Image (cartoon, rainbow, N blue to C red; front, side, top):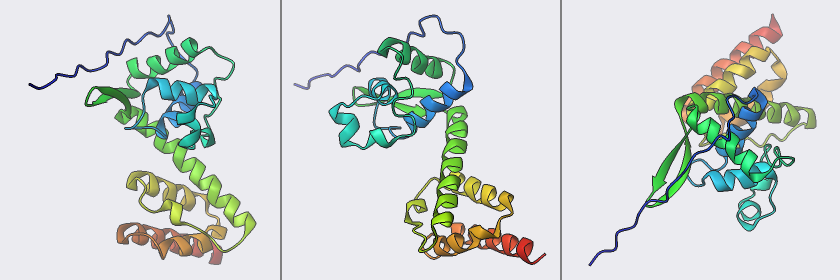
Length: 194
């Protein structure tokens, strides 16, 4: 005889919130990005509140830029903001067997992708200031849309200082990304000569 497992019920409650500031939405989406497809509302609350719980620390979630963002709020007030993002179409709840986890909606991923691309751009700028060798392995096997957005942002800087890290990156990534890196490199070199 098989045992039937029931999905864990999720009750969303915004506690009367009708809107949240953009910076709070961005913090929630950035925090969620680290647990998309693997964690739920409770884990995201722990990240945003700056919890030192075992699941947060063991998974390196205390390294998230959103870690502790809502430190001054209660768990319930933080959860209300997370629920607001779900009810307003930025995050969605999906299930793995009976347990709920968070996933981005298209609208939420559009914002999170922009946030992550900006973080990566800043990281490359820091690497340039520190000098070679340029370690670019962390950019391989990332979401392709986000990587192309990052490359667009690098190109938009018009700064030829990005060429050496781009060359290092081109050596390790896949063909389609290499092609776009080559285009951006040529454009930045053209700007440098012009």
